[in-house]
Every structure is written in structure tokens, then in C-alpha cells.
Length: 255
Image 1: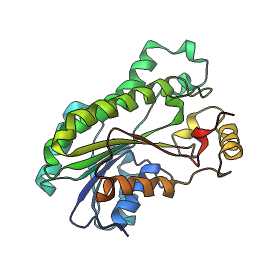
Image 2 (image 1 turned 60 degrees about the horizontal axis):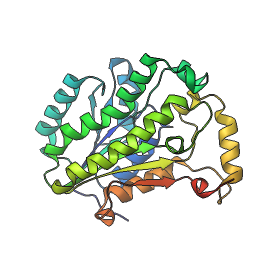
Image 3 (image 1 turned 90 degrees about the horizontal axis):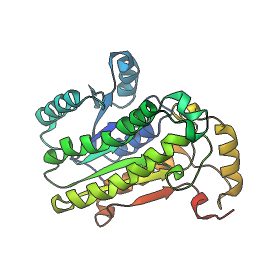
Image 4 (image 1 turned 90 degrees about the vertical axis):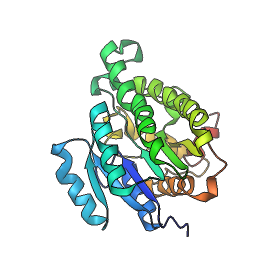
């Protein structure tokens, strides 16, 4: 078993116990990491408390990743509480629901802006704030999806945002490499999370994925968590700027 004793990990994007971020948090804590999780606003604080209770020793902080002042405040608290951090998990993505219902050509200017601000720029902002606390080096992990590379019907502006996210991973990896900070993306197959349910045709997507993937099934959140644990550990110290597919092999298939 991987040992993350003495390390601090901060996880963004836990909505509930079905979240990919929740599976990652569980794996990191089980490996010995001291865990901090964030919630977006006071309305979600109750849900966060339930999650904290399920992971003894975990701390929670409020942070809306679209608000620079809240990001600054968060990392001031994190610095005061822990001194340094070793892993940051960015599992944050959002686009207005209407943008995922019509054809991509009808994407609105505001919908495009929101999707890229919340889903992409937030990674840059968090990396900038976290990197001074990664004095021992570290690992930044974000979540992508195959729609960044190929057209997935109704994924629309989120596919374009994920493509920008993957490009941002490469640029951040280049910037932060001299500080021994690695930046990678996990491209998970479709999973029935709260966020994914906003995508029209999710059921068909899951069925098609299971039929076409070499392993003939859909990925489970725990398997994504295992990959994040690997990326957070010393077993991946030479891996940065990569998008790692955890999708039962779906992405290798031509048809």
C-alpha cells in the first residue's frame, strides 16, 4: 500500500459521496495523507460536514474557485494550519445546463465564459496560490474527459473547456517543473455523478462506452481514485504534463 504519511492533500470539487473527488479523497486519506476538503458556499456546508464526519481528522474550508479573494483567503488559512501542502486535487467543472442541451453552434458567449472560468481558469488560479506552499515539490491533479479530444454529442462547450484544461496542464507542468511540482490530468470514462447527470443522453453514453471499451464495462470512481493516489505518490515522480486515461480502454478504439 502507498504511504502518504506526513503529507497534506487539499481536494476541490466534492459535491457528495458519488463524486469522483470523494473517491479520491478516501484513497488519499487511507494512504495516510492529512486531508483538507473545500465546499463552495454556506449552502453546501451541511453536505461538507457529513463528508468530514465520514473521514475523521479531515478539515473543511469554504472556497468559491471563481472568486480570487476567496482563493487567497483559503490558502492563507491552509498555510497557517499546515505550513505546506503536497497534493492538490482539482475536480471542478461547470457549464450552464442549457449549454449542454442544444447543438454546440448555439453556445452563448456567457455560457462559454462561465465554462472556461470555472472549469479551466480555476486550475490556473489554484496552482498559482498552492505552489508557494509546495516547498517539498508536489502533485497537482485535475479531471478531464474524452470529449476534450473527440466530439461527444451534447458535451458541447464542456468538451472545448476540457481541451483548454488539458493544454493548461501542459503549460503549468512546464512552469512548475523547476519547483518539482508535477501537474497531470486524469481522463475518466463516463460516471453517473451529480455533474454528469446534467449531460443529455448520459444513459446512452454509459451503454455505448460499456459495449465498445475493451474491458466491456464502465469505470468505477474507486479506480479513478487509485490513479489519483498513484499520481500523488512517489511512484509517479517522473510523470508530468500528461493526460492519463482511466476509461477501461475506450479511448483506444476507432469504432
